[in-house]
Amino acid sequence: MKTLAILRGTALLLACTSLAGCGGLKSWAEDGIFTSPPPPPSPPPNASVADVVPAGPGSNTDRVLWSQELDDEELTGDLSFRLVQAPRNTQFGASETVVNATSITDAGTTLTIDVPEDPDAEVEVRFTVKDPAYEIEDLVLEEIEGSPDMVATLPDGRLVRVALDMTDRNSGSVDGELEWTAYGAWSIVSSDRNSQTNSYYVTGNETPDGNLPTSGTAEFDGFVMGNVVLPEGRDIKAAALQGDASMTVDFGSGEITGAAPNITATPLGTVTPGSPPTIGPAQAWNGLTFEGTMTSGINGFSGTTGVSSAPGNSYSLSSGADGYFSGFFYGPNANELGAVWNIADGVGAASGVLVGKQ
Image 1 (spheres, rainbow, N blue to C red):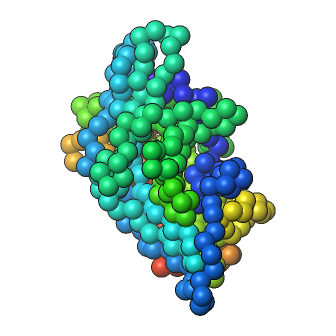
Image 2: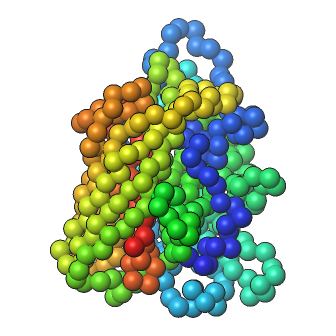
Image 3: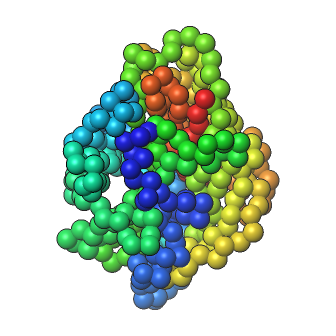
């Protein structure tokens, strides 16, 4: 995705992120973003993690369709990319709570790139949350020296961070990069630093509806990455997730299926305000399955996420966990796919991205 390639300098390795800090828990904690409230007068309730809800771009119709001009880097001006996402809210306090940010999911979010006519001029990146309750529209993001994040501070003190990546993390990848699909994470931290809303996302140069194949099958090799959060007393513990994935798309029937059988969880320890994560040794996590259908007549697909294995360790979910996935095809002829997924078992929950290419 050559238009987004100009932002590769801001790419973020997401392998050590969690819902409590999409820009990296350690650096964020050292910046003093998390603060602890005074202890309550009586024992507070334990932490809780909500079940997941369907993911997607919401009602957001802003999109950038693939065109030859984009590949030739001939287009200039504003290009507004809609994000496919499943955002969640984390509340820090006497006990930590993770719930779905459904209003953002419904309304959608946009990442806009202003490509100047002068090739030597700086590119402007803006972030918009369509939900008016967040009052974030065309927020200009600035790079942080020595950091892969883009960041902005709102007048009311909220901190916004956005990260973007185009690395193909499949272990069998030859060239190591995606062409038309990008993924990443964003976070909005409250002014008192005791709550935040955040999400993994995918975006890119979407395949025009008329360019989608109408017959035959295609195999997409790719990867999943994300995080899992589980309650631990009054705190939330988290682990980063990553593994190879494969998807099969039947363009004739519209069926889309896939699996990520060998996902690794890297523990980040307890998510505690004011404390950096404690990276633990990698361990086996659940295998994931994906079963869905393409949207009739137009680009897009959605379905359900399940588990194929449950190792029963301290970060894995139970065998009955289920959830959702949703995404689009990217490139001139559905060359790549990108989706977000989530899954929960009534105790803990996980979410992340699913990306692959033919």
